[in-house]
Length: 381
Length: 254
Image (cartoon, rainbow over all chains, first blue to last red; front, side, top):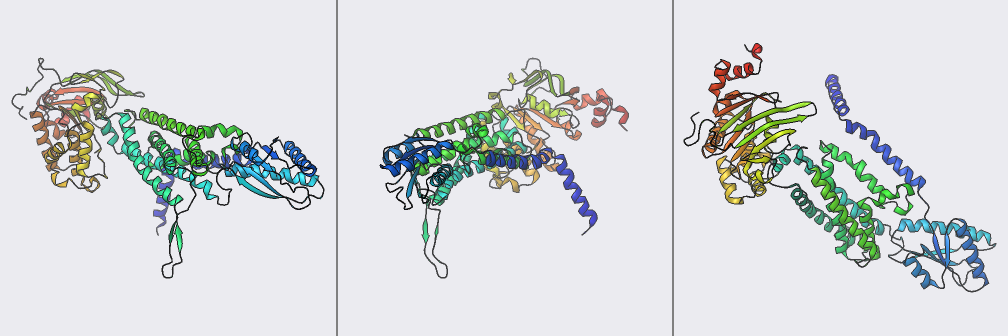
């Protein structure tokens, strides 16, 4: 090994990176931005507003426990309403007037450890868990206020889906949406950049082909591959294929077996819409990149914040209020919500939330498409 | 080079010019890449744009093809002011880089550009690949072609719609002498059939193959005429020397 040659290589690498300003900037900006964002979300995340509806059993014991729990909840900033029975509480949670229902059992206050039923919506398990934690805290302080009350057992029920016994149920739809978005962006960004740097875009612009035709053609092309990707991902996510034991190999099953309450075609429509938007986003961002490396460098700036803010990991409702508006302008937010509506709630097109998600995603796709077409300027080649 | 019968050797005022520049200016920041250029080019002739690297040849071609918009003045091709998308169907443009898709086959590239120009695919593809002598490489992936073959495919993609006006930006850079001769034979045949060709080059030995030369320097046309006329004007028998003298670099010549 020649020291001179190694030093020459070392210096060449340093010089090259040193002249690549975007790379240098990203070396520091991206990790600072992302860790800062995560810290902000985790530290400043808003505790969810608890709007509890309580069903109190008849009798003095129930009334005492109910009142104590209610005042404890109110003390921590929650609103509390009363419901006559479990069905009424369920209805309140379902139509959104209450965020959590608390059903006190008839035997409460008799000395045995009671089993309290708690009902949440189920669409946003992370958000539900935060609500549940608030209620548990209130129960603890209520229990300590009433001497001799044993700690209750909590039974969690959800309106949609089953409570978080299998967390993948909630993450799978979000991740399908995220990957479709992410890979279509990378593929389009890199291939359009090649079109720019390889001289074929100049060539193409010298034909009667219009910019709109380019955007639509790209969308169809990459839409096809997004379609195939989503179909394969859906089969993998929803399916379970049992493979019997073969010789020394034990039996196993392929596929995640995630339950799907709604129509796979609706889920597919949501993913396709977000992927179409990603095609145009890739074309648009390729305007600002000179090398394929720079397309990759947009990931921490453009893709990662969306991952953090769109509800894939942290529920949008638990984000610091300052950055919640950011979530509202990200296509992925609507894709994640739409997919959860279909997967967990079994929403169809009659459900207004899903209609909004689909409309917003279609709007983003058109908006990005126009932006992309405008930025394929003849002078920028 | 003898003029082709039926095509006038010099600009005839009775014939509508194939293209024209009127006070054309293109600035990039403070740099005037094309600096107040006015000219008319007659149809069916081969024009050579000669000049050193960075003299404004490519920018002038990009103005005429509508790839870039003039800062001032007007560029006109076949009577239509550029940029005009509709007019692009009548213009062929072979860029300096090959501008073909390396992952596709030869025929797929040709077919794609045929569709982009809106011409009937298969027949045009067959014909044009025959012309550039790539008919037997139709199914070859472009990435596996030699540099010269890729250049020929690039030419084919510029010819596929049989345009009456053809811009060739340094078409023979990086190709061997034999292929260069073949290219020029073909350019001459096209001109004979009425195509107006603008070839940019900084290779002086190609200049004599053109009907007329436009010497470009710092964005201006500093001399124009046949190779003979330019030599006489500069008082030398060597085009290279003529170019240097006309550009005011006489002192650096031997």
